[in-house]
Structures are given as structure tokens and as C-alpha cells.
Image 1: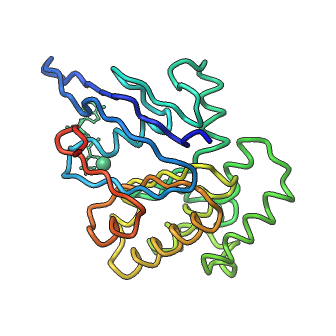
Image 2 (image 1 turned 180 degrees about the vertical axis):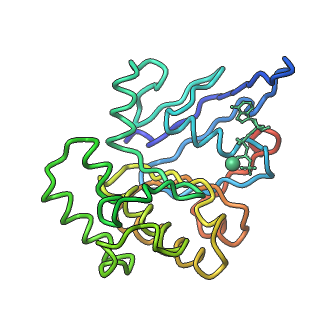
Image 3 (image 1 turned 45 degrees about the vertical axis):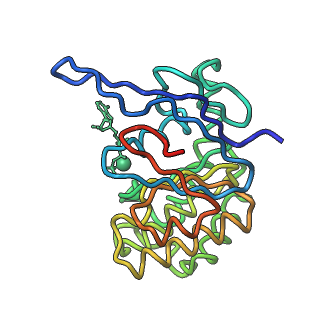
Length: 225
Ligand SMILES: Nc1ncnc2c1ncn2[C@@H]1O[C@H](COP(=O)(O)OP(=O)(O)OP(=O)(O)O)[C@@H](O)[C@H]1O
Ligand SMILES: [Mg+2]
């Protein structure tokens, strides 16, 4: 079976305002097979977020190629790339990116609304996920009333709503205290393993990285062999 995501000698250069070339990633290769959980570690500025953006097709490499479910992202028209992401990739960010004026359940349902999924089925799935993360009783609350850990659990439900083959999480516990961060990670890894979603998550924590099936380390844009 195809890897969920494959990086083939991927480079990403940025041009700074001063005109210099900043090489955020250099010839990074790797693949994430279905259901596998991979941690990405490395210092600040080493290219971790850039790599996740490439996997999601939100950003494009300057050299090399990224394949999502066996399809070269660069070869796809924008609309198909967007659809591939929408149908198969879930995203969790450090700062949650929830819609503050919507309820918990509405936030979880956003991907289904965007995709035009039948609402009753999506709503049942949303309720099931909220129950799994212990938030069934908060479904109608405004999301801005929640704690950070609770908000991240909502974001996790939103990311998993459409059963993505790949869950991308950029420092999902970076804005949480240790205890709620651990609770979020337990849920993230437990749900992903239960549903067979592959995961690529960025973390600064050795303990969290050790819970993955494998860890990739970046140094100034280069993947450690
Ligand atoms: N849009 C951009 N324009 C210019 N430079 C960028 C851009 N995005 C990222 N960079 C640079 O690329 C390098 C890698 O950035 P990236 O955000 O991937 O690092 P990171 O490993 O996620 O760091 P952190 O742990 O601080 O989040 C950094 O030097 C950053 O300044
Ligand atoms: Mg980052």
C-alpha cells in the first residue's frame, strides 16, 4: 500500500526581506506508512512547521517532491490538492484556531460543512468524538468559555471528524501545562491508533517523542540520518 505521505529530497528556500536565501529544508526524505505515528523534533527554526505545511500541501517545496497518498502534490491542480487535503488530512495547531463565536459542536462540524457532508451523520460522529474526549456535556457551550486543554480536545475532534488518513499536529501541547498536555496527547495518540490514522506531530518534548513509533530530528533543515 502507498505511504500516506512521502517526502522525496524535499527542499524549501525562503527569500528574506534582505534578499538572502534561507534554506528552511534541505533534501529531506522520509515516508509515513498507513497508521504509523511519527514525531518530529528539532530546535526552533529547524524546519519542523515547514515540513508539516508541505505534507498538507499548504506550502510547496522549492526542490524535491511531496506525495500524499501516492499522488504528487505539485502535479495536482489547486482544486484537487485542496480536496485531497480536505478529505484525508486533519490538522491540529498549537493555538487551536477554533472559531470563538461558534459552539463546541459547531466547531467540530466545520470540516463537514465545508465539504458538504450529510449533516445528521456528521453530527452523530461529532457527538461520538466529543464523548470520547470527555466533552459531551459541553457541546452547546461557546468554545471561548473552555480551558486551553479543552479547546485542544475540541480541535482534535474537528481534525478527526472526517476520519483522515493523516493527522498533522504542530506542537499540539505547546500552549498547555504539562498535565493537560499529557491528557491531550493521550487522546490524540489513542484516537489515532484506534482509527488507524497516521500521525506526524511536532514536539519539543523527548517524552512525547518517545511515544511515537519513530522520531525524525531536523538540524537546520537537514534530517538526521
Ligand atoms: N514564510 C517564510 N518566509 C521566510 N522565512 C520563513 C518563512 N517560514 C519559515 N521561515 C524560516 O524557515 C526556518 C524554519 O521555520 P519553521 O517555522 O519551519 O521552524 P520550526 O522548526 O517550526 O521552529 P519552531 O520550533 O520555532 O516553531 C526559520 O528560519 C524561519 O524563519
Ligand atoms: Mg514551528
